[in-house]
Image 1 (cartoon, rainbow, N blue to C red):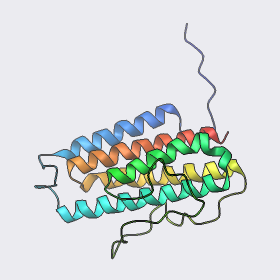
Image 2 (image 1 turned 90 degrees about the horizontal axis):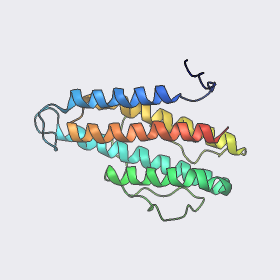
Image 3 (image 1 turned 180 degrees about the horizontal axis):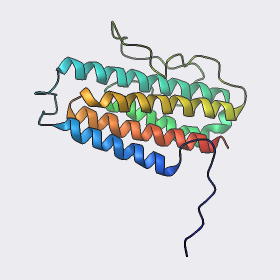
Image 4 (image 1 turned 90 degrees about the vertical axis):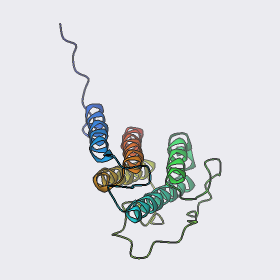
Length: 190
């Protein structure tokens, strides 16, 4: 006798969709890993990897700034949002960027980026303009954070193909974490 299916939520990704996207990202990483070394030796230009790493760090820094703005506007969300912000800070560090540490409390003003913006950077990232007004409603603020996480995870998944193995694996891992954060934020907004 089959078990009845749980009711499906009309918003946000389902667990199966989330797992499928993680599996797809892992397959893409396996295809792009090739025989290059950790510096991107044979397949791609090291400057391409450096630019991708710097962009990923800036995107994560922008996400941390969004988290800070939401926490400043809605301190009651700290239980849900605080651990996800701490993960975003770890992502910045993993990509070699610098921002306020995970133990630093958000100040209400967006944190400053330690690195200078790259000249000729590509189009603005999904995490751009974190200083935009935070919605007054907590649920809307969570939904906005979820949308930013989802957009950044999608961008990172699309970026994987042309990168050397180690960086592609890191980007895939962080993209999967971002998709999970989007899911948690969407569920938290209910």
